[in-house]
Image 1 (cartoon, rainbow, N blue to C red):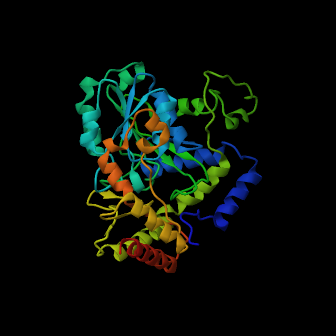
Image 2 (cartoon, one colour):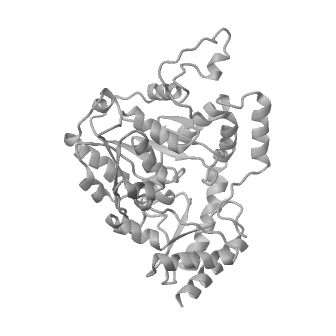
Image 3 (cartoon, rainbow, N blue to C red):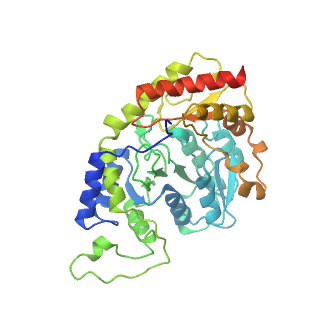
Length: 402
């Protein structure tokens, strides 16, 4: 069976994790801090904090901005549940909008229609690692600044809707020659096991807030907030005579460990020179196989202004029903090839349906979802296996549709 997306764990990663274990630092320590600095330099943003997940990063930033009951957060209907769940966690209302027909990303015109005086945050999602239309979204929140109703000093300081990008898929992607992480106010990356760059579990918050915000000051505050509200971390307490600490607020527990950062440091070092090259070759092979077959719609992953990071290959099959798509997936699995679907739209999930959301209100989202199949893309997928995947997809589609 060809798996869908196993991580690439080699001797170099094992050696670095072993070194971390032997160092005595297995929780947040020097490797985590080094990883944060290197991520900031890579992305070109202002400060970065590493956490145990992208989900934690999204929720922490909602809380930092003071989002709560009575507030609205705009997000695409086409995303993973985490994007919406964090809005529920803080007591706010998710406001779903439809996506573009070509690239799966949030539709800017639909965002504008959804903005009210209760809107506090827009959460675009870089689906499959392809950046959203950030210039248009950044301009939109400035255009709508007069409708913004701040509820606290942080919101007054910004004076407009905050853009909190769910960049879980898009580490390394670029928009107008700038890396994701530096494209808007705040971007949150995932380093989960299936991501292009993994730390086993983990994520980071790329701070890029405009003046008069001090991003380093916010970073220092987030370090406290994400470690139980404790004003000194373990690294600081190792300084001679520096054992005493205080709890300055009821914070959370979502720090990254040095064991995770050890993996991330190796992954980052070879990301552009190795990982991305391998993934790009797989995309190119798939494109070549499917581009001239009218049954298939290949994913958008590069334009004049955008370069995706080759995270997912969301192939769409033209003129089929959801039931036919599911039948094709079964046939592909019967040929010992693992595929996936990204994602079942959030308004179609039971929890959200019970809140009154209806997938029928997001027709483009449903149309994209109902005919999407994500193909395997991972470092150790060989050219021969790529051809096996291609044959399985074509043969399975032919069998179901003929």
